[in-house]
Length: 298
Image (tube, rainbow, N blue to C red; front, side, top):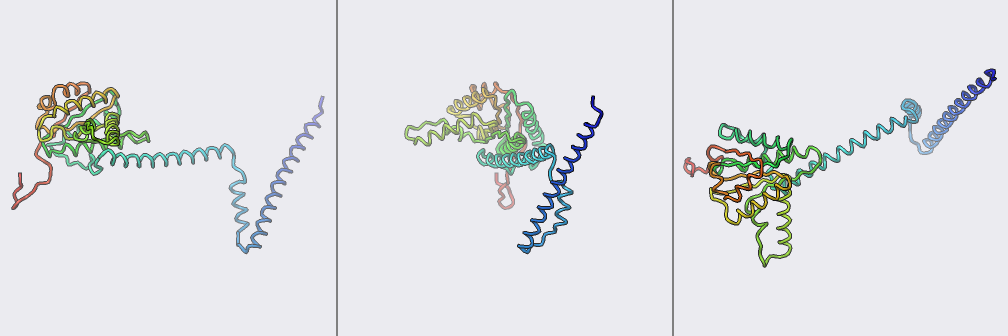
């Protein structure tokens, strides 16, 4: 049975070892400072060695590994956040250009009055609801007379949806097109170059797959869709519906009740695939008037 002497010897040995380590660190530190002083003397530099010594003592020669890991993880997360934000901003700028979205029109820049307040409110709610609940695919139809602000409201919706859908760098695409651009994707010309045919197919695929498509300017001047368009538009809408993607349409009609006759039976049936929201822009044209002798030209 031990009389305790061995335990005392172990404790003494540990203390001695600890002192030796401490003396070793101190000796190494003093040696380092001496070498720095020698280099300083040779180079003629003026370094405050006492301040350096105090700073090292205050900060500690070595940090706790757990603290170092936490600091590294925090720094990495900051760098990732900055990189993601840069990518998000660049993507939105590129999409504004490639998607033909006018960045000058946003909800906060729209002039709201009794003639368009309901339509603006409906448009904002549609965007917010669709962002929260993207299914089922929805169709927002804006109708109104020429100059009533349909394109402006459509651009504001596209800009809002693009910004809000890309709060995180998920890169959701938005595209605003005219009926003429859509029609061109389905034209066939035996004399066209291969590059043109390939580009047409790329454009068609983008219109079918972009996360939000805005088709602006149907039934221009109150005219109904051409027979060709009555075939192209339903094809596009069926393709997007199968992918679960929503759309926004603007139609130049004085009243939404004219819609079935203007777009044709096949197109109107394709509308019914979606969860449809309609809104009417009221009032006269919002475009700047041309005056002659102080009298507006109609």
